[in-house]
Length: 265
Ligand SMILES: Cc1cc2nc3c(=O)[nH]c(=O)nc-3n(C[C@H](O)[C@H](O)[C@H](O)COP(=O)(O)OP(=O)(O)OC[C@H]3O[C@@H](n4cnc5c(N)ncnc54)[C@H](O)[C@@H]3O)c2cc1C
Ligand code: FES
Image (tube, rainbow, N blue to C red; front, side, top):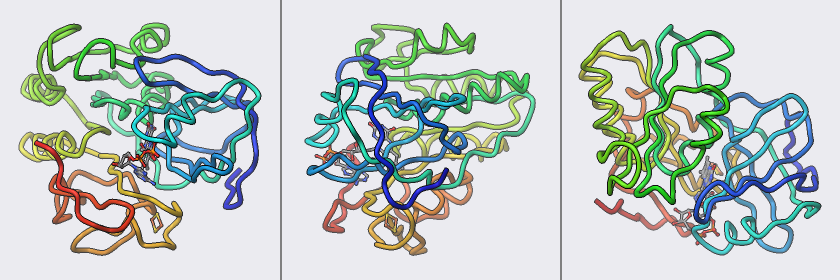
């Protein structure tokens, strides 16, 4: 199903993923592929984009990190609450190669998890690097263990896994060789580093890049990127080389009014 008018669905289940992070599961057959996103309408509040983080036969879910008023409302949702769902939108990841690495920072693990599951089903050797600033913010550790997905955990403060950035763990793996493709989602400064490392090691890569999105399907122009001007929502998933051609990649995004917001370094 692809819907440009919201379909209203009750929340079937709420999962506590980490500090300030919840997943909302819906019972519905969603015709989506790993990497795509939904516009979620919270009645009387707002319409916001969220990646598809759970994708199973007959059910799907989103994972919400509490950062402001809408995400906070979503994190307070209970079983039976009604939400409007539009989509799926954006281009999915292209799964290829025999050995792949997935690199996630924060809620960036959300659209990558269904990709890890699909890769496992296809017998592709997968390493999932999941990073966060500290242990309490890490998501999907248990989920990955249960699904039998090989993970490397990194934290900025060393409270869990390796004390390093996700990109340090990626660089080690790329130096060891034999990697066919890298997929990444998370803070844009991290995505830029991932794309540059892959270019240096001549390994294919795809990144899921986010901008302020108001419509989600290419009409409002709020997600256009400098200096090419295309609406990012029509793609979201870009090859590393496509992303590196975007002038503002890793430099700044724009807020709801279109004002440039530089990324904190
Ligand atoms: C394609 C895509 C997929 C996303 N997937 C997820 C996900 O899986 N899980 C998750 O927790 N978050 C995801 N986000 C970000 C999520 O949309 C924002 O965190 C959310 O809209 C915040 O709204 P708020 O009112 O709580 O916060 P606000 O106080 O309004 O804003 C807090 C920050 O959230 C971002 N944001 C706010 N509104 C939007 C918007 N309409 N579009 C893009 N960014 C916005 C801005 O960076 C802003 O600085 C995704 C964004 C995009 C573009
Ligand atoms: S969000 Fe409206 S054009 Fe992309």
